Image 1: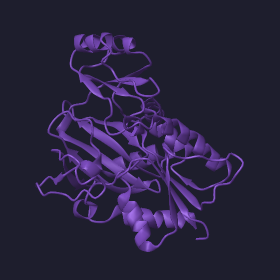
Image 2: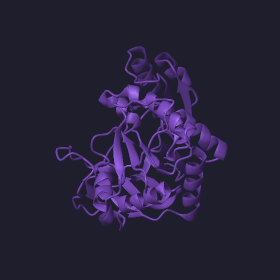
Image 3: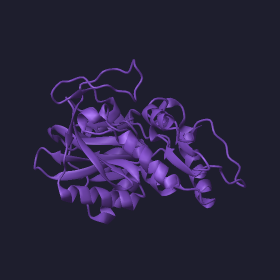
Length: 315
């Protein structure tokens, strides 16, 4: 490998295991922090490959400028024919929940009914005809940022009138039907190179919307997991996780979604409605935070397989 791999990232902790794996192998690489970055449009970047790990939730950490800047940088890389994993098209899907639903709709796949708004006052009208409860979620999300649930039209109208809705940095949000999860669990299916890697089921004790797999602290059997991708003082939560083998038709649909979004490394989440056992895809993530203590949960280290993939693509 004559030129280094670049890891373009923003979150301070999530990628420590990947950096450690690349360092263990002696793989030439550079860390590019998205919130402190610059580029010259006339210069070809000196990398064999750039792996885009930019987090859409950066706006929750004071780095909203990096979200929109990333689109410019990815376009620059691709114009200079630099190999990019999770490039411009993937990041467009990552930072737009409305775009994700449009893609699911084009594929004919099930998702919770929703309307997009760009003003808080539009939320009550947007919810007309939807089945309550509903959630209002910022178009640019990440780790459940800004998501609120409303059980009645009156509660939604009161929040809209009182400025209690978060529309996020692009001032766009979804008003979407809330799906009560069968057995209190959601399923996340990870892809690597656009193909199935593994799946997990995450169990939540309530209506939390932050289901980052790196933050899950226990197995379904109650064993504590080592959360190497999180800071040592990260708060413990009540989420529980188990490895899972999804049906072949779900694997095929997840790979179809990833391809349509241009996502090579990512996670697709779905939920089974407790009311009628119907499946709904509801979140598409180009930024994949592998499950904590993965060898214990899914039987192998996904960071090692990720490093293998990056090295192959860089050559």
